[in-house]
Length: 122
Image (tube, rainbow, N blue to C red; front, side, top):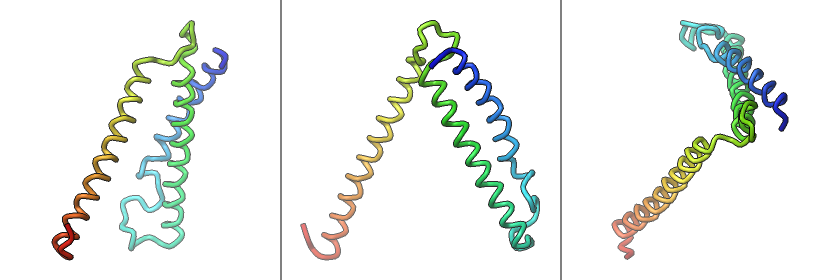
């Protein structure tokens, strides 16, 4: 990716972040401060739409930031992504996979314990 494209992506991400902060603010949604029971069907639908729109903007922002991180900062002469950020991302991914593996093992052992209590299976 060219340096000018990366610069434009960074500028876009700043605009998206500003927009996301505005859209994600619950005080800006229809029916702010009232309980859901007090809202009309139209107001509930509008509030739901505002939440979905904020999440969509957040998704575009995240994707844009991922592109910038993947291709490096434009003032980085080699255009390489930040190695420390890549290492942090790899560590988080490994921790997530380890947690899933532990959950699978615990689920199997819990099922075996339940089966042995209920059915007398070893």
